[in-house]
Image (cartoon, rainbow over all chains, first blue to last red; front, top):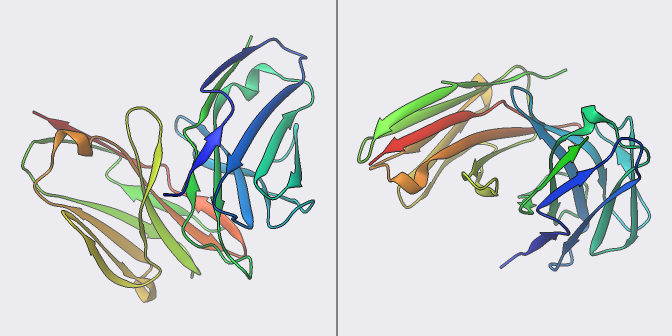
Length: 115
Length: 107
């Protein structure tokens, strides 16, 4: 079974803090993704990575950065957390040689609250 | 950009009922997936279905790419089917999700 794990299920941070969300997958997938999910807006892509040290912006990258130093790990960084970044964050991975989307596998999500 | 619309937004059914969820998209897409998000927030892949019909137990899906829609069928609903169902389309290496259909199955 594919396993995608996220470092925290719930997280509470203060405005201005630097926040790290970690995602690890154990299936040697090339592609990894970070989404946020908000009521009424569905899931929106923040960043994705198709290889180690490679990253591309999604639809809403502002206020976020990412790091992919190892194939199995994709980190989402909030440089200075703000209240409008309170959301559910979902990580996903997929195996695709040509960057086309194949079946994605999701982690359990991290519910981040910024006070 | 491409628009993805799901209907109905909410659906309440009695256990044992059948349901059809619809996903319309505004332009041609490379791929389409259906997901189920359970009440605990976990997103589960259901189908990867850019075209044609697939079946998995009580669930089946049909995508008619030329007419830009996909349908998800759930037969003999169970309470564990409750949650939000999302369709997501892939276009130009970007994935766009619909806003979901919230399904509540009553015991």
